[in-house]
Image (cartoon, rainbow, N blue to C red; front, side):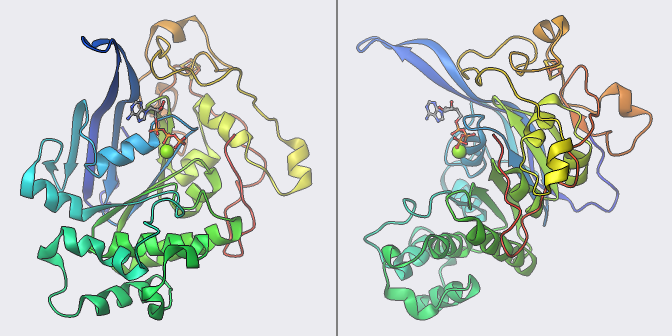
Length: 364
Ligand SMILES: Nc1ncnc2c1ncn2[C@@H]1O[C@H](COP(=O)(O)OP(=O)(O)OP(=O)(O)O)[C@@H](O)[C@H]1O
Ligand code: SF4
Ligand SMILES: [Mg+2]
């Protein structure tokens, strides 16, 4: 694993060996387990106080399942999640409630995640009903209005309903609700994926401002590589339930060593036509295998352009590859590949999303 620098803030979340398998069963009266959907299959990472960890990967690789596990909405099949040093995976009752308060989730779809029959004031204030111990003692309405103001919404809209707002405004309502209990960590599951590009940038800028203002730590999930780069200090790339490469944004975007990351980056649209001409796109063969039938050895091997016989029998470990261990430098970051190597990075920097909303890019 990469060593943190001596000045790095302390870990607030430490995830190790995290597994979530959903059993596949057959039969009505006598249910028999016939297999398992291995949605999350051995995930390790650390989130440090005040930082943003971006998690990126194709649809179905287990991102939302990781998010639900982090927020204790589901229990893992195995593994540990340590919050401030304490394993939270087996907590119940009051202790679980206290942890849930401190790790809040912001959901992807602002159209379906808000109850259409509740006013904005009731939606943002709802967490106070669940956690009366941290509800404002006096005027709850005033606190809700303050929260709307913090996320850039007119506090006078407190009696309006979700359908009276645009998509971006609705996501601001979701963020206000997430902030109500003053959490330490926000797990944002594709918070801008359902929004127009120009609105995405505004919501991301808002999240960055709130992070600085309240000292929040973020796990930011997206399939959009440029969005993740814009907001993340570190990035983890997931494939079929595992992290296959992780490092700082510079390490991942400028010096990727895992073939999967290289393929994802080669598909990011490049605005400069000349750079576009020069770059070589890696087209991945086939579809992502089912998480109920994960390939032996390296789980990426069925689509990897570099696969060799060793890849079918030996599981690659997520660690700094031997080739880079002694020389150090930006290629010396964790990568789960037997043949990890730098490849010519895509010409020109991966476009970051600017405040005006230009420079959008998506993974395939
Ligand atoms: N409750 C469940 N029961 C069975 N399988 C599930 C359950 N929840 C998720 N899965 C499966 O686990 C895998 C990972 O799903 P998950 O929603 O975590 O992926 P994701 O990376 O968030 O995908 P997307 O980008 O589409 O949101 C998928 O194959 C999904 O069908
Ligand atoms: S271990 Fe083999 S199959 Fe897996 S990413 Fe590396 S080269 Fe490809
Ligand atoms: Mg998801």
